[in-house]
Amino acid sequence: MGDCLSQRSPGAPALRSSGAGASSWALQGLEPMTKICIPIPTHQWVQVSWVPLCTVLMMTQSNPNTAPVTFSGYGVVSASVAGTSVGESATRVKAYLLKMALLISGWPYSFIIPYVDPIAATKARRIRSQLILKLRQHYPELCQQREGIEPPRESFNRWMLERKVVDKGSDPLLPSNCEPVVSPPLFREIMNDIPIRLSRIRFREEAKRLLFKYAEAARRLIESRSASPDSRKVVKWNVEDTFSWLRKDHSASKEDYMDRLEHLRRQCGPHVSAAAKDAVEGICSKIYHISLEYVKRIREKHLAILKENNIPEEVEAPEVEPRLVYCYPVRLAVSAPPMPNVEMHMENNVVCIRYKGEMVKVSRNYFSKLWLLYCYSCIDDSAFERFLPRVWCLLRRYQMMFGVGLYEGTGLQGSLPVHVFEALHRLFGVSFECFASPLNCYFRQYCSAFPDTDGYFGSRRPCQDFSPLSGSFEANPPFCEELMDAMVSHFEKLLESSPEPLSFIVFIPEWEWREPPTPALTRMEQSLFKRHQLVLPAFEHEYRRGSQHVCKKEEMHYKAVHNTAVLFLQNDPGFAKWGPTPERLQELSSAYRQSGRSHGSGSSSSSENKDRDSSHQQGPSREPHPT
Image (tube, rainbow, N blue to C red; front, top):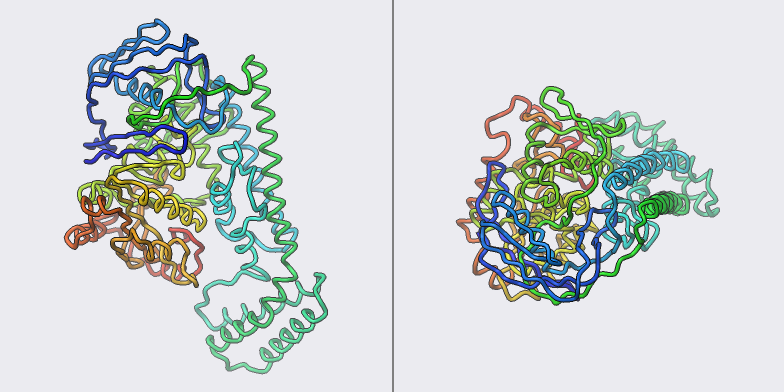
């Protein structure tokens, strides 16, 4: 049950977090703190935030002297800031400690805005959700208008993930400051579907039909674009040759048709791609610039809200001496005006939360989980008056990030089974998830993409901004290649610089169809910090669905359609403390056999063959496409 120390980022203090024990939700418990007496700087500043549009810490203006604060385990906490005595009972002491620990830490503020009335903040989030829905609608329209194709499945979601890796803008969701403007993965995905999308073929007639459709689409595209005379000649000659072969050869097998299709792609593919290049770049550029325009509109609305409340746009943050403290959820706030009217009702076992006609849903069990996380992590709402609006904002944010369609985006939010988490905690001291959300987390310590909504429920911040000095961590990133590559760079930097025991257990897919292999996987396999690599075969291990907070119990797990590589990245002290010994690896593999539908499901075996058939059609997602 080791602590995890967090290392300061440049110019920012170090942080420390602690966890042991488990509740009924398997959320890591809070160890009693030892007595600490540290002066708190009370510079002349009032409001500070480290992310845009989030509720922030309010401090009373005071003199530049320091005020002592005493923490004493789970007893009464008292503090004196600006001459005001504060007392909290043992029932709220944990929340108060969270607030004071981060106050001492002098958080590395990357973006400064003043406190915003939560009513206005909720309105701003609603505006953002409406605009991103429009952006999602624009994307397939652009693909149809400019290329006559449906957008690749989940490509918009992967575009959002890739943009978050490179985005330097202020909006927590929409990309607004990215280089390059044209997203390389989105460009590749669309180009792969030109002139038509190819799929896995099982029968001879399907192969024949696909060959004909490809030849027809290639000819139509090259005739409608400003291609060079040589390109037109090559494509037309190969297309006519293919049609002639199709008319003459009636005894060809499925393999013959597929070989002919591969030959046609090799001959025509480069010319077709060259002809479509400008249009596809136009799609990628257009969708980004629409996003940029939406961010400007949100920002204008935000500034209008500030002006209405007589709040300055920027507040200078004080300089605080770096020091090690405990690391807790990144949500700092005090009493705020009443929250907007959010309605809640039950539909069987589902909790429905509505705000101004926009409804989100979550199962009763996961609603209880969010309540528990909120109790652990929130520090400004002792009466729980703001719980429902914040749950609405949380659910709406993830709905907008991954789509509102049935099963849409859930493959990018899958998590490990409970038995595997238990084994990781027992065998390797893992008590922290590097990629999670309040909806799919197992531990109460985790990093997530949106601390402005997730911080109330325990998020520490995004993984790329989290710099632990010691501890044992699980990393199961969304299957976005750019994000995984950035993760490897971050982990290697941390392992190289830390003298304390540090360990990352990474779960990453082995896509059999990918040639060359994923750069992140190749880099980890060649890393100096790799201690072991365990391969879990496809269809012999499971994940929990990304829609676990709304799906039925019998649909909670699904078979992985690709191999999963489990890599142990550890520095020398971490290897000495949590090394992947044969005994530990055996127990970890056994945990997978215990997980998920170990009780047996009637639909499990019948759906496995469908999963196998669809596995070669999948993009970089965990789940098979629902049938």
